[in-house]
Amino acid sequence: MVPISVDYYYNGFQIYSSMATYRKFIFVCTGKDCKRNGCKELLKDIKGMLKVSEHKGKCKVVKTKCMDFCKTGPMVVINSEVIKRASLPEIREKC
Image (cartoon, rainbow, N blue to C red; front, top):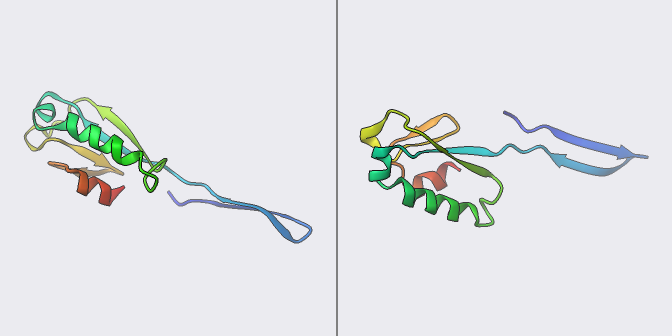
């Protein structure tokens, strides 16, 4: 999706300008095998990362059921990109 620019003019002066922004969704598998491989700690780290000002409001975390990639957990999907054996530095890079 491409952000849409919105501009309003009054007597030749620009009085309002904003860009529509879209949040990225971070889907984190919370299935049994991913829990064994550390998804709870990863979720806690991701939520902490999203509270930092540079990432604040840009991403939303969604916990999911099993994604059927059980041997390669913890599984994370960001913008339809699957990250196997996800780590916080990888997620920070994508978000």
